[in-house]
Length: 79
Image: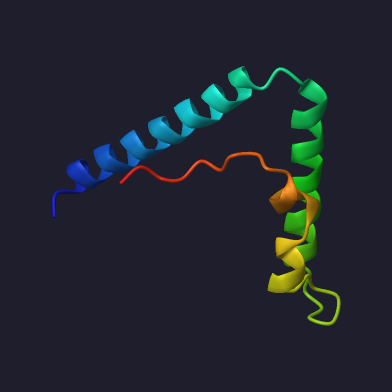
Protein backbone atom coordinates (compact mmCIF):
# COMPACT_ATOMS: atom_id res chain seq x y z
CA UNK A 1 0.00 0.00 0.00
CA UNK A 2 1.10 3.55 -0.72
CA UNK A 3 2.28 5.30 2.48
CA UNK A 4 1.17 8.69 1.12
CA UNK A 5 -2.33 7.35 0.50
CA UNK A 6 -2.48 6.05 4.07
CA UNK A 7 -1.21 9.39 5.42
CA UNK A 8 -3.81 11.31 3.40
CA UNK A 9 -6.58 9.00 4.64
CA UNK A 10 -5.53 9.58 8.27
CA UNK A 11 -5.35 13.32 7.61
CA UNK A 12 -8.92 13.26 6.22
CA UNK A 13 -10.13 11.35 9.30
CA UNK A 14 -8.51 13.89 11.65
CA UNK A 15 -10.08 16.74 9.66
CA UNK A 16 -13.52 15.06 9.86
CA UNK A 17 -13.18 14.59 13.62
CA UNK A 18 -12.14 18.23 14.08
CA UNK A 19 -15.13 19.41 12.03
CA UNK A 20 -17.48 17.21 14.03
CA UNK A 21 -16.15 18.47 17.36
CA UNK A 22 -16.31 22.10 16.21
CA UNK A 23 -19.87 21.61 14.92
CA UNK A 24 -21.01 20.13 18.23
CA UNK A 25 -19.26 22.87 20.22
CA UNK A 26 -20.78 25.58 18.02
CA UNK A 27 -24.27 24.13 18.38
CA UNK A 28 -23.92 23.92 22.19
CA UNK A 29 -24.91 27.26 23.67
CA UNK A 30 -24.44 26.33 27.31
CA UNK A 31 -20.74 26.58 28.15
CA UNK A 32 -21.43 25.14 31.59
CA UNK A 33 -22.64 21.92 29.93
CA UNK A 34 -19.41 21.75 27.92
CA UNK A 35 -17.37 22.31 31.08
CA UNK A 36 -19.34 19.55 32.85
CA UNK A 37 -18.79 17.19 29.92
CA UNK A 38 -15.03 17.78 30.02
CA UNK A 39 -14.99 17.23 33.76
CA UNK A 40 -17.08 14.06 33.44
CA UNK A 41 -14.82 12.80 30.64
CA UNK A 42 -11.72 13.33 32.78
CA UNK A 43 -13.35 11.55 35.69
CA UNK A 44 -14.46 8.59 33.56
CA UNK A 45 -11.05 8.29 31.94
CA UNK A 46 -9.26 8.38 35.28
CA UNK A 47 -11.61 5.80 36.82
CA UNK A 48 -11.39 3.43 33.81
CA UNK A 49 -7.59 3.62 33.69
CA UNK A 50 -7.12 2.94 37.41
CA UNK A 51 -4.25 0.47 37.76
CA UNK A 52 -5.72 -1.29 40.79
CA UNK A 53 -8.40 -3.66 39.41
CA UNK A 54 -10.33 -3.56 42.70
CA UNK A 55 -10.74 0.23 42.32
CA UNK A 56 -11.11 0.33 38.51
CA UNK A 57 -14.49 1.30 37.06
CA UNK A 58 -16.20 -1.79 35.64
CA UNK A 59 -17.76 -1.76 32.16
CA UNK A 60 -21.23 -1.95 33.73
CA UNK A 61 -20.50 0.97 36.06
CA UNK A 62 -18.90 2.94 33.23
CA UNK A 63 -22.20 2.84 31.33
CA UNK A 64 -23.81 4.51 34.35
CA UNK A 65 -21.11 7.20 34.61
CA UNK A 66 -22.39 10.78 34.07
CA UNK A 67 -20.16 11.19 31.00
CA UNK A 68 -21.93 8.39 29.14
CA UNK A 69 -25.36 9.33 30.53
CA UNK A 70 -25.03 13.00 29.53
CA UNK A 71 -26.69 12.56 26.16
CA UNK A 72 -23.95 14.47 24.38
CA UNK A 73 -23.48 13.10 20.86
CA UNK A 74 -20.28 11.17 20.21
CA UNK A 75 -18.21 11.80 17.09
CA UNK A 76 -17.55 8.53 15.27
CA UNK A 77 -14.81 8.08 12.65
CA UNK A 78 -15.94 8.58 9.09
CA UNK A 79 -16.16 5.36 7.05
